[in-house]
Image (cartoon, helix red, strand yellow):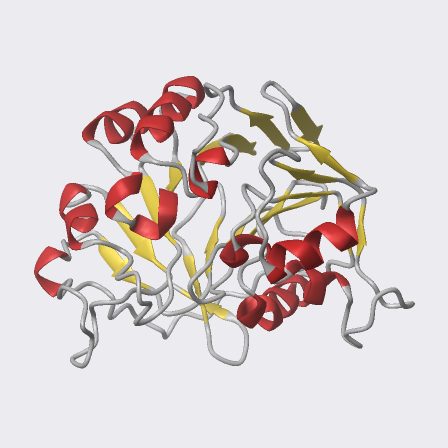
Length: 300
């Protein structure tokens, strides 16, 4: 297992540096993209239990204003942290320290789920959000985002397959963001986005989020998997790691790595270019990814 990386080289990321900050929110997803002139786009907000980690990450970059916040879909592990994060340090909304969010995009207002996390999210954003239609674009200095076109989901589609697929370009680095879409829809998105530098693995590396077609079409130089330790879904799947055996893979965390885990052991499927982070991950246009250090700071 190639997760035992040297922690001797400390590298600080200055506020305003451009790059992608994947936040370890447990079993869920959240990422901060920072453009070359400080424009900020946040993708998803993790589960309620991960909100403090996302708050810390935003504060680490001295971010008080988010230009665009995109939620790929409405599952609790993607929208659940939003209410806590936008309320600021005092946890009260509205109040003077609320985090300013200029635009909010989500998947739209059809077949809305009946969950506590979604209900709270909707109460906060209903009057200021926009459904992100295919072809919608956001552009700022050094950062561009496009909502990719997918076939409309069937009436009985699960929440995962109702989500958005996004193509991101940051200072020349290209990334596919498929949320929790199933592999067939990921393949459609990958064909539209084209070969990418970074693939944020769909559905936390689950067996249903990756296929040979989607991997070939995306052809990523790096794959990032957001999952929680010992999660009950056994993400990522051993078969996903096996399919990525020739790729550079960065796992924020994973089930199936501890001796007490009831998930299929992953050790046999770790390859030479697979890395278990156990925390946050920073990817800039140039240079090796940086790993978040306990208590702050970064290392290679």
